[in-house]
Amino acid sequence: MLSEDKLQKIKEFTATLSREELIWLNGYIAGQAGALQGAIAAAPAPLNKKITLVYGTETGNAKKLATQLAGIAKKKGVTVKLAGLDQYRLSDLTKEEYFFVVISTQGEGEPPLLAKKFYDHIHEALLDLKKMKFGVLALGDSSYAQFCKTGEDVDARLEALGGHRILPLKKCDVDYEEDALHWIENVIAALQTNVGSVPVIARPAVEDKKPAGKKSYKGTVVTNINLNDRGSNKETYHIEISTEEDIDYVPGDALGIIPPNNDKVVDEIIQLTGIDENKEIATAKVTASVRELLKKHLNIMYPLKSTIKQYAEITGHDVPQEARIGLLDLLKIYPVKDAAMFEEVIKILTSQAPRMYSISSSPSSHGLTEVHITVSKDEYYVGDEKRTGVCSEFFSTVPVGAEIEFFIQKQKHFRLPDPDKDVIMIGPGTGIAPFRSFIAERDAIGASGRNWLFFGEQHFLTDFLYQVEWQAYLQTGTLSRLDLAFSRDQEEKIYVQHRMKQKGAELYEWLQNGAYMYISGKREPTSKDVERALVEIFMEHGNKTQEEAEKYLHQLAEEGRWEKDVY
Image (cartoon, rainbow, N blue to C red; front, side, top):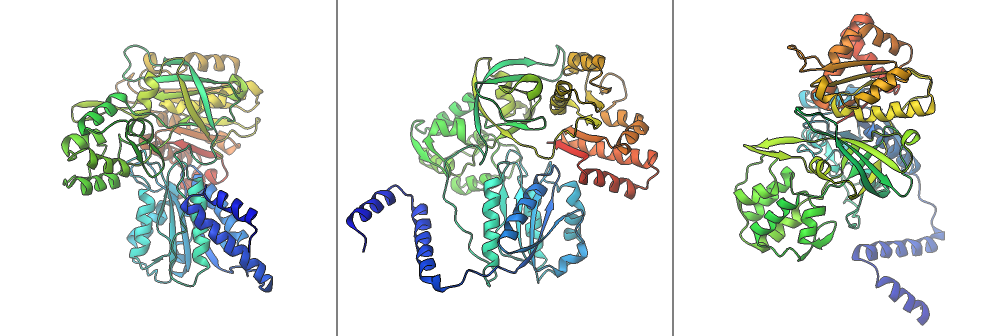
């Protein structure tokens, strides 16, 4: 029996715990008791299970994560065969017993380039995977309509071919670390049982917060200027943020922010539904007033297809799975019956996803208490009505002196090489942002390696972003070469890939001599067009077949000499 004093302390402590924490504590105490009783029992034997863990990556995140998860599994006694899907032997698929996939989604729901052969193979070949027990971890960005679609496709196809899913598909947003670690715990739990599948280990709900492991900073906007001149078709904002404390970042990192929703849209939603804006509602991750939820925490501009489907179930309307339809449009076209029904709708809305912007400043050049980003105003039409992206609208209107909260997203694979290495940078449009950081850093530290920049936009006179800076770097020799492509300044459109092909011999020579090459900007169509141009350059100037040229590009990626920061 416990003493009265100990019993009272336990009562006081357990009164502060949630239901999930009490369940965990119960298991912990049982485990401790079992350990004491089983000083009689031997230590648990290693699992002695063998698994294959494959990854499909575009920017390196899936590879980094899979490597980390493989290390955790090995410490638990699991033998892990780790492979990139570009290197995986497709003929081994029918022999796999335990097969786990970490894969990202690109653009409009497409597989990573290096995983396309695997993706096509499982969708085109008639395979017998009845021996296979599998699980899929999908990486994506919920601000895109096709969130984690590649992972969904792979998961569904492996099951359709006879594989037995022992873990439900896990979808991870840009802040994937915590969810991914929890997934590998469930993988190990599945391997510890002899049954076909295991219940997923529940994880206590957490308050709405920045991505796990990311330190939040509070800063003040000190500069916000439009880099485009009068007459431009575009608006591109250079924003400088100052902080009181040092910011932990290096060139290649990104700044993340959870953008607030437009006040006018929030007001209209509240008015349309008749809901009390001050009423507190508990959602999956945060409890707050209706106004605060709609303004700061919930994705009301780009609901996921799954959210729209749930909306239809709640309201009883036959809602088509339209792209880019916001909550306000849903409410106008397919109205809720009353405020109580809208409360149900609020509870199914997903959290506002962080937006990431490549940092365009350098700590060595601009200091540790200042960070710069370059933001293009994203405009599109819904019918005849012009709309603006949530975060780009926020940054285009945020006044100097405004306070904002942000975090730094580390990009471990998009990094400058040693100071003596040559660098080739391909950055059309706002893709120029990280290369402004790269050049400023190399200039500040006196790097001896050469720097070659390809930049493209619509017009020389109105759209040459950071023109004065690039010209100054050319004059001082920090920038060795600058090739420009202004697509609308002549009858025939010229893009960065055309300039690259014009300089193909020199570009290939730089790479043969050990240069590192980077691209930043839109995945569609720029990144793919550039990759096609590179393959053609390697074929022409390296005397390679198309297959050999594609392998050479993959080899550069494997060596860390071809890195992408595309969106």
